[in-house]
Image 1 (cartoon, rainbow, N blue to C red):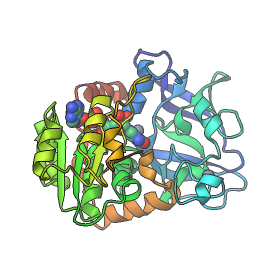
Image 2 (cartoon, rainbow, N blue to C red):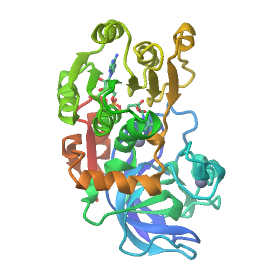
Image 3 (cartoon, rainbow, N blue to C red):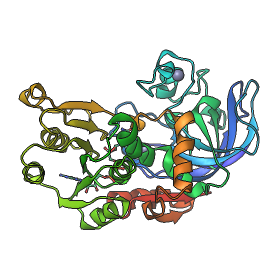
Length: 367
Ligand SMILES: NC(=O)c1ccc[n+]([C@@H]2O[C@H](COP(=O)([O-])OP(=O)(O)OC[C@H]3O[C@@H](n4cnc5c(N)ncnc54)[C@H](O)[C@@H]3O)[C@@H](O)[C@H]2O)c1
Ligand SMILES: [Zn+2]
Ligand SMILES: [Zn+2]
């Protein structure tokens, strides 16, 4: 079939919206008619050429939601008409990692996905016979996508898809960092560095876990106000004195849980240093620039602080994204304030410009 998609032709250049070909789903694959897609930093990072593992041409996008239009052979868990959220982090339910409760990093299709291919090593996307690769296994800046069944979460048909798409990346990452990775305990003192989509999700996750104090640290007053809406009890403008301020708020001990959602290694260090002596856990969700390293004075670890990373919030997508969506539908999570701009596929480059200016939290494209 022919469909419209936003293609990354050349790094550093605007995406080009155009007609491309999409082949039928093969075994284990599903054709999804996308209704909406959020625009995330990772898309812009790849488009800029800064990501050394990036490739072109490719259809970008990974925060998609839509309706199953057709299924290939051997698809067992999805049927035409199902509502789905796309998963750049799949869940095969069979590999060593999927069988372990300790991680969400499914091993099933990693290698081909990283190269931009579907699991059989080919693409369904093409143009005049030339293959176009599938970005993050999702390629959701498009009217349709073909994806493996193991990379689609079936969600309630009650969930508006132009909001459900946020659960495909940033929001689940933040929520999951608090709920799954850190497993925040009720009554605890939490600090979240960064009030973008991921940090705001972490604030909401800490609140859902019953944290007593949730300090959000950011450089923007407007974003801090959004954090208050998600349950932050204290707001702090970031900077060199952030660690000291948190120590002052905790009788010199530090926080039970800290979260880093900025991607800045200097802030990651602050998140480690403001975690509590004895048991403080620092969860790093931000993606640092290539080659950057995190500097930690080992004494912070010897005296009982722990550091861990979190990819997609430790969320096992097919099992847990539907549960997070249910919590949203039950009004436990307020998704509305995150959507700052709604636009069409043709405005994809404007969405990147808005993101660069930090104008709003998320732009959502509707197809
Ligand atoms: N781990 C994952 O699976 C995963 C998934 C999605 C995104 N990410 C990463 O998470 C990070 C956050 O993503 P986002 O979409 O929320 O980004 P964002 O750019 O919208 O938010 C980052 C926030 O950090 C704030 N900030 C900058 N300097 C600061 C400082 N010194 N102290 C405190 N706050 C400061 C900014 O004001 C901004 O609000 C990025 O690095 C992104 O790549 C990770
Ligand atoms: Zn993303
Ligand atoms: Zn797996």
